[in-house]
Amino acid sequence: MSGAGTITLGGDLVVDRMGFGAMRITGDGIWGPPRDPDGALAVLRRAVELGVEFIDTADAYGPDVSEELIAQALAPYDGLVIATKAGLTRSGPGRWHPDGRPGHIRAALEGSLRRLRLERIDLYQFHRPDPEVPFEESLGTFVEAQSEGRIRHIGLSNVNVEQLERGLAMAEIVSVQNRYSVVDRSSQDVLDACAARGIAFIPWGPLGGGAADAGGALARIAAAHGASASQIALAWLLAISPVMLPIPGTSRVEHLEENLAAAEIELSAAEVEELNQAG
Image (cartoon, one colour):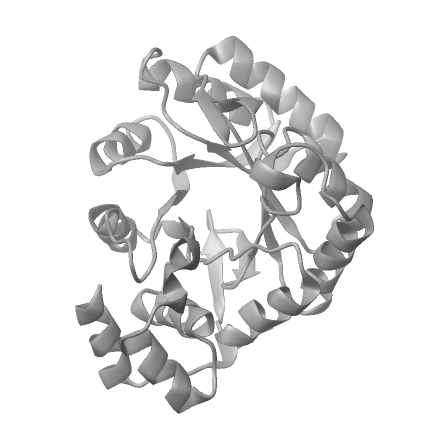
């Protein structure tokens, strides 16, 4: 366990509050296999050695590649929670397309179960609402799969507060995954809604796409702690809310170790407030 503490998903899955996002173990543009497959496997195994208990992926990462590598490196998953998603398709590097049709989600679920070598997915997330398909129609497929025992818990991703409320009217939603970082707080209202309900908030892009390396308050506080700006950005996320579950991702073991070490950094109340004001 790290200094991040734990969070409980759905009342029964207790995981360390610093997870790992497995998007970047694929090829450039999150497309195709990684340049160094053995390196990708090493990153996954090292993450677990360092106490990571929550690994987040999606069928769209590769597509399929991330899930296949996770199974190759880690199955069977002793004490691990593997979270994946459905609702996005790909047409090339960096190209993403929502697909919330029930038939697509059902097929995606079966594919993820097969690639991950699982009979049930612990956390299955609706990757992105599809403007061409009613939200309730898409989410209804997740609810059906849950009733069939194919998934344990349901999560949402890239939603607003109104969509979260609609989801909660249909099912127990145990997590929301939205973009959020010290430099991008556009989902602050969603984080607040999750905190009020005890729903885990999984910030994707937790390092702001590299913006965490910028100067200002981050640089000053990083220097004071002998840490990197990225580590301070992660420590801040853990400090501002007990429902926060960061999932920084990387394809390099050294970067992984640096990210996870951020859980041991204790920011003062004054430092947290300075970063709050800097956003």
